[in-house]
Image (cartoon, rainbow, N blue to C red):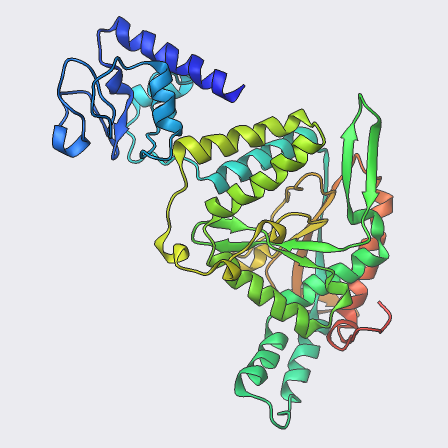
Length: 411
């Protein structure tokens, strides 16, 4: 089907160009330059003659749709973003008007990562009725516990300097604490940890309560934000959680995100074909376009990194809930966080700062932060999610329940 669509589009381009008595080569972009004049034969490797010849061919033949398709999809030749240039002729009228009347400084095509994020967020906004709540928490007990523990931190005999610095950093950076506390809370409020299959015309809807607590957390990289998954942190001590977070974060920043999402798309396409799910056609279209037309942008810094030091599809697929540490990036409160389908719950964490609070009738400075909670209102009523606050604040007020927890202890 994709091939047929490409054939139709190229045929239309062929017709439009022939109507203007232009060469079909005007649709080509070679090394970023649109050929709209007599080409430099040495630079573009086009051979002279009355008939057009594609690079690598010795004889001239009529330039046909079939030969164009062969040229585009053949690994032997450098692929030309032919369909990318079709956008020069067929644009939404509002965009076309803007381009005619507004000076453009730069044209930046979406990367595969950006395209995937845009699709997921559009699907989320279009299909999920978000119910949101922002809560300000007094986290002074957590801050005081960490400071007190740091002052009492003693050197373990035979311990390396790096490990001691790591244990000290564990008390200064609260990211791993919040992920583990989040996982413990989800363990006690299982309705929030799962995924929704909502097909009203087939069976209504099915909410799957997951036994695994797979929390994806956001990592900002030069190539975009990616969400690696930390699996079952409620079953691991805090030091293990922090080390796994550090490993995943380093891998995320050493990974070409376009390459990663191409691999993930292949996994999802195979699943869609096995389940005969036609909604997977969009993923197939994106994969084919990225694989055969637009190509994968090479990033020299990540291309030399060994595969086992990069994120793999299993590192970003299979999350049951998402936590975004928004406060690490900037101060303020995000009003609405976006649930990533088929998940049903999302939590964002704001920045930690001092603020005046009334304690026992007196105004005193306290360490506060905000959490932003979003749930898919199709999956459950708000009342089912209220116990989340009661459990989460218990770990804030008693941080030793997280810091000193060991495998085998009660969750």
